[in-house]
Length: 168
Image (tube, rainbow, N blue to C red; front, side, top):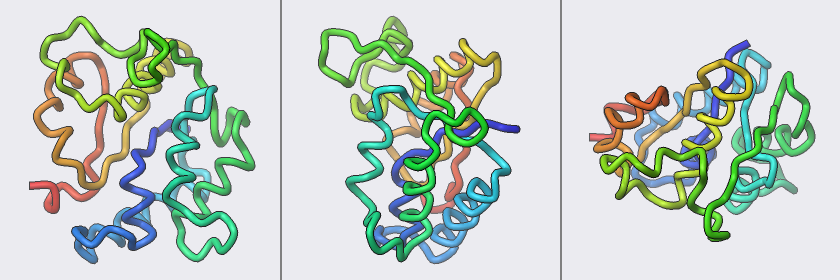
């Protein structure tokens, strides 16, 4: 089974909470989350719940009106189940929670990569290290990643731009 890491913007857009996303992008994000929920892919997160805690800020777990809400609730209920939501250990540097040993910190091409998104890269590289499988990071719309795509690829990080036409 393929492994993915889901950037938060996929969940937000799937719930229809991003005004800058096209209807096509919303539908693509919803379809992608539905595929995951049908257990076609497993979602990798970190063992300290940095990713899950970020997700929780953007969903309503009580009403579960959107597929993003259902998706996050499913992950929370199955965290640690290696067939649905495997966890990897990532090592914070300097105790700040945004820099990680697993992130390619020595690569000057990634110096400006957004601090809050580094956990996704660290999780991808930790999973590759631990499971021997390259997970795909699912990204909907985030122009901040675009200038780093080649550098990330050089480190074995695969990114799937679900809404590529909305990104440019």
